[in-house]
Image (cartoon, rainbow, N blue to C red; front, side, top):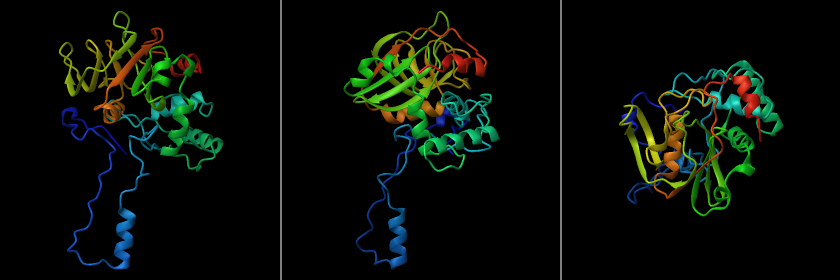
Length: 281
């Protein structure tokens, strides 16, 4: 289970999920017995191995997991929102993987003909995330048909989508700027990156910052627990793990940015009321 460490400044190996190739055996090594050879083959790198760079990747989430604080997010809140949007979950968005949440995961897995175990596996997320990307027709055309990498933020729906050569790679739940500090709309390009950035105005850590317009950036939030609670000071707040994932996928590419949608005035909406408003595809 991936967790964000308490020390943001020590978040060294930021490219989470990358596999490390094992070098070939030395020529002088004696031939291994059949059993050892089989074990070696089983442990060899597999091109199809799951990593955080895979499409729609998320960590595995199971019964007992919970979103404890911004430094320990297990993506239970996100899971509950997305299960609500497909009609599989009807309980509160609590950030706790309860018995009802497990039941909802099983319901969704049966619907998608997946292994029914009540665990939000990589395959479960790979079905659930693209199905719950909202208002696709309103996502800018350049995101869906553009060349290279594009990231699109829908201010009203608290939704970020990442595209590569017109293919949707992933989507995350986020929050944007408050009244008077709303995230600026328009087309931009990331011009500065700093994985250990600290705000010079607020003194707040902004891990994995990717700046696209003045002081506005995509970055991990040390305060956000629920994307529909409160606002930022203008930046696009992500869960810290999600910002690290985005960084690992895009830190060395030209990233085009598209901010669209009307400003969302809801700073703190009750989960169920918010779901009714957000359930718009």
